[in-house]
Length: 115
Length: 112
Image (cartoon, rainbow over all chains, first blue to last red; front, top):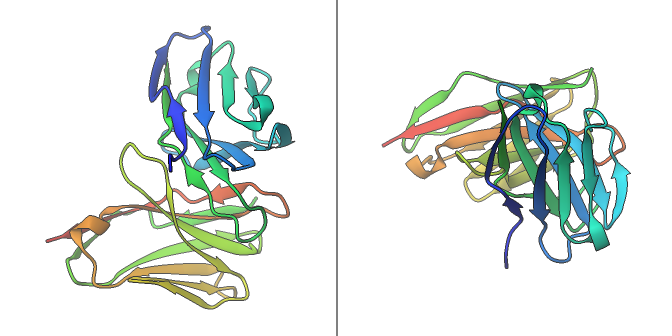
């Protein structure tokens, strides 16, 4: 069974440009999460989808970030326009079960560098 | 604010010994704590979950404890192997929502 896949694995862009990250969760997983790790800091929650609906987007830094999950399958996270402080590793995770038994499966992340 | 702290210093131990990693939480009472392993260039991999009403949980060579009085979880790897070398992350729920809050992680190196 394929795990969570993220694309691209690395992205280097200039300030002001647009970048779109993609996440393909494990098939059948209704829950999809985006997390980010900025260098030297803890992993931080960005948002949570249940199927195609945004359940919680309280961690999104600002309106330059837009996440979508069309048809409840893959998800994209677009940053437009990118700023220097957006650099970091963006992780996607999926899970099948909600509640205290929830176990997250993570992708390998997208390393975003904004120059 | 809710915070998880892990020992930021790398832990170096000899193969065969027991590794013990610490996770302390402040300003909240998590319903559960999770431990993940992360290798360079990869995402976190779930290892164990322990609930607030559980004192101890085991899985093969791994053992996790949860002490609500000390506000602490300990993660043990017994009979450690060089393949156990990785960063270990502690995470917990942040209230009644589904998001996790994370510690910085502790790097473990098991020397042959």
